[in-house]
Image 1 (tube, rainbow, N blue to C red):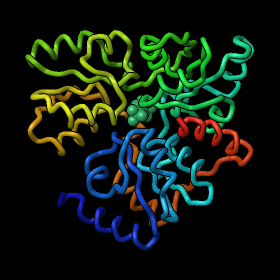
Image 2 (image 1 turned 180 degrees about the vertical axis):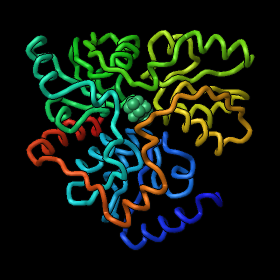
Image 3 (image 1 turned 135 degrees about the vertical axis):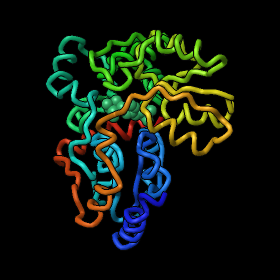
Image 4 (image 1 turned 90 degrees about the horizontal axis):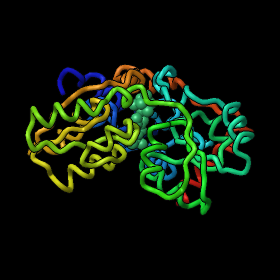
Length: 301
Ligand code: 13P
Ligand code: SF4
């Protein structure tokens, strides 16, 4: 990685100096994911592994809600996000006020919120979920009906797998909503035998045409386990780049939808984050204690 060696060397030295670790989501660029990250994974793995971090400083190479989750689980540590603008269209689609209105409309129905939400929204929910555990979380509540907010497509995809009635919201991931069933048909025609894996934030019609749907970690595990000759991942671009490096024997077909929020994180701003200790994530303590409960309930499942 000669083009990046200056930043990589500086980051590795700064991590030792600051006693810092870098948690990176599967959508981070390969030079981050493979060269400087200490812990990589999907949202669920990053939350689980954040609990056991012993370093003083966590740099979250991902989006803001992931940094907030790491902070909720490590209130005494410094959690840095290299760019405060690294948001998420799902997190932006719902507010605590919306949750309160939904509770008025559906009294007594528990609220399951996707981790792709602000801490303030988590604080007003009963339990969180990720794409990796949504079905288990919904079924753990032992009730016939739940609200699952804010990702409409994830809610519909989970509803297809369970007898629990699911009330959805109208949020969408701006990356996954762009995939269409016609894309899959074209890919299958152009690349005979290709195995199609889709993220459950894709519309249900896309998931219906895929061979497998699962979280980013589940897609990565599928490739490692099944070793398909040809595969296409209907998800963010860097995911294929990262998995392909670990599986040179697999041919990756790469339709590419970038997440502009994930791509705000670069080696250069990770380096600056560690040099200048910026931007520390802060959460109002009254919000944090309630939001932490919702995340911890999820992690107990
Ligand atoms: P995962 O939890 O599957 O990693 O997904 C997070 C995300 O932001 C997908 O768009
Ligand atoms: Fe949010 Fe979609 Fe980007 Fe994931 S890929 S961070 S859900 S906008």
